[in-house]
Amino acid sequence: MTEGSVYIDFDKVEWYYGEGNWQEKVVVSPELGAGKLSVAYVIFGSGGSTHDYHVHEDLDEAVIVVDGVLDAFKQSSEGEIRVPLKRGDVFFTPRGTPHRFANPYLEPATAIAAKAIL
Image 1 (cartoon, one colour):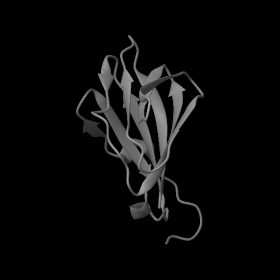
Image 2 (image 1 turned 90 degrees about the vertical axis):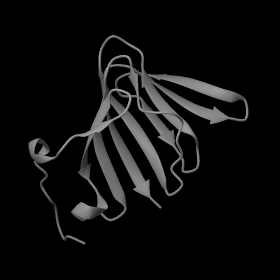
Image 3 (image 1 turned 135 degrees about the horizontal axis):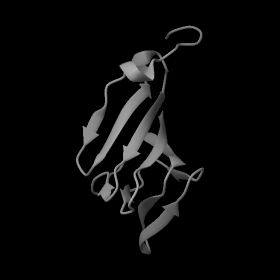
């Protein structure tokens, strides 16, 4: 593991383009010496969503909305639950919880996704 602080030049990190009109830059990761932490800058294009429901078996995830509005969804015993998110809101998903995000709105939304790898 790297000792001390590490500077990451955001402009030098490559974008990953996902299906459904979203993209992310992973700016902190175990590969960069961050232990069990991963942090990504995510842009959800207008009218787009991440993908179908998915589950992280080995990590907890917190998504913090930086700008715009975004809808988070999770599956529960009562069915699908929609949680509208605005700037500053946090949506925490513990490992093993089916979830997804969607942006049906007119403007893009940006968020920070922090993942603790268990």
